[in-house]
Image: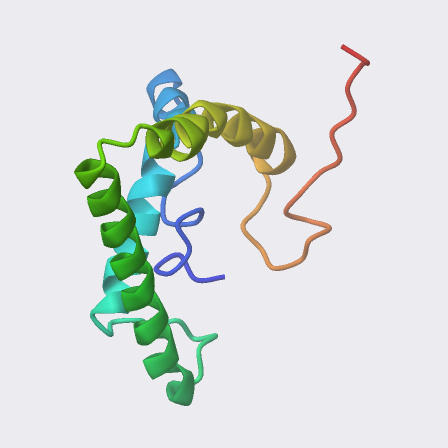
Length: 128
């Protein structure tokens, strides 16, 4: 697992109330995704899991994603379409805290190791 190329690993696990609030907001993850996309688009991908011959493909894909996002945003602004906001942005922002809490329950306080039996746990809850 590579903290430089995995937004989930780039930030330490929360220890204080402030760190928990920031973590649950999802902002560090979104910032990490943005940085990774930018790094890949400019050809700076250094992931050990990407073979050298695959680096151009990573760069092209990242650039295509950036272009897609720019086109969608421009079209939404041009047509003053709010659908993008209500079917993509708002659900992503509202769902992020629930996802972060769920992932904290499964992975919080577990070691950052490759073995799935050591870095996760089963979460059992009541029917409610």
